[in-house]
Amino acid sequence: MSDYTGMGGEGGRPMARYIRHACAFCTLLLAALLVNAARVQLVQAGDYTGNPANRRAAIARYQQPRGDILVDGKPVTGSVDTHEQLRYERTYQDGPLYAPVTGFASQSYGTTFLEHSEDGVLSGADPMLAPLPLWNDLTRGLEPGGNVVTTLSRTAQEAAYRGLGGRKGAVAAVDPSSGRILALVTSPSYDPAQLSGNAASVASAWARLNGDPDKPMLNRAVRQTYPPGSTFKVVTAAAALDAGVVTDPDARTDSPDPYRLPGTRTTLTNEADGCGDTSLRDAFEWSCNTVFAKLGVDVGVRDMTATAEAFGFNDGGVRVPFSVATSTFDSHVDKAQLALSSIGQYNTRATPLQMAMVAAAVADDGRLHTPYLVERTTRRDGETVAGSGTHPVRQVMRPYTAEQLKELMTGVVREGTGTRAAIPGAIVGGKTGTAQHGVGNTGLPYAWFVSWAQDQDAVEPAVAVAVVVEDASADRGEISGGGDAAPIARDVMRAVLGR
View 1 (tube, rainbow, N blue to C red):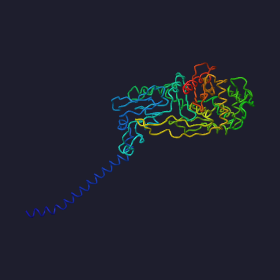
View 2: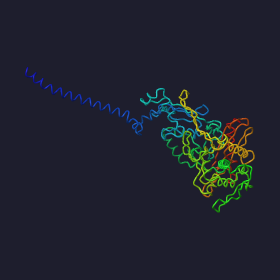
View 3: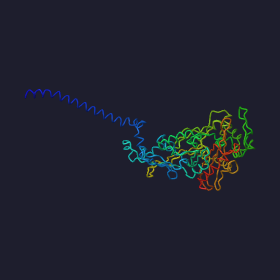
View 4: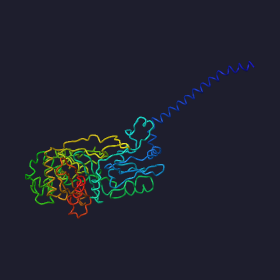
């Protein structure tokens, strides 16, 4: 018995060593597992979350209703419970009316416009919505979706949409004294609800909308640029007055009719009679091309470019909060090209929002307020999370120049080409435009109108509007900004003024 015990004692020491080594090895394996788990959970979490094969994020995203986009304090969006794995789908009230603002939120195709730029708030992922943001970061939880309060006026939006009546075109309206966007309409439009879910009908709608030659998903108000035609003469007049090329709007100008473009044999003519050597005031009221083409040449490329850029042309960073297409004024031109650029042709291009900004700057004594569309964001219970913040203001032209331009624009509405924009009891200024386009200018001209309005006893202007109609329902010779676009602008201005 003693021999057996002795052998066991001697053999127990190496056995204990093996057990210790095994324990140490298991401890290392456990530590490695913990380190790897931490690496996956913390370091590589973003990669796994963003992997298209990982549906957990999508499932979590659609497990709760999305926050709403509000107009005049009322939601124009909603959510419906489908009781499927991706549980909640987006719904829209008056979808085609607000599509250029809301965009769509699709389980299949992502998000656009406010649904995209404010997705963090609407989905509940924005840390600002959480009372304990750090805890939410660790748990990767979602708060209830917040709301986005827009600056839109429902009556102005409806007036613009009704005025376009399904014709191709767009309307943008802003508050000149603040930059608040009051209306943003494009036509033809579409219902974003068609793209909300993930059924076969959604894929069919996506293919149909993208294949439609009328491009109903194109936001013509902010993502389409057009030759602004004679509405750009507001900018040219501002440049001429600021540079001292014109000192008296009522003095005759040295402007031959027809006007031969410098360095060419091409002559420029006018639709109106009596434009030869006429004053700036009369040329503005009757939209004389020859006068403004020559004024642009007299002002010169440098000053014309500086004035255009002060109004917002060539600025690729405009966001409202989604991006806006860049309006352009070509600074690398010869004199003939400058002449055409100065009447809104050649390479001059503008969005309707840009031209509303031009009218707004005139109305507000030469000050241009950066346009914005979101007044504030809130939690689901209405508590404000973030306000609109401060918005840059810049002096585009001298106040006296703006005052002269206001007189010129009121003359257009009182007795010029824009009489159909007049509103009883209000002061209205405007400028018509008919922009040629297409190969050899064979396309139907775009009908433009830019304007501003205020009550007669008001201190500040209430609204500035830009309207463009691509396919005005008239014969080519009858198409004009005064005939097709001015009545739409008038109705939008009346809606804002409450008339």
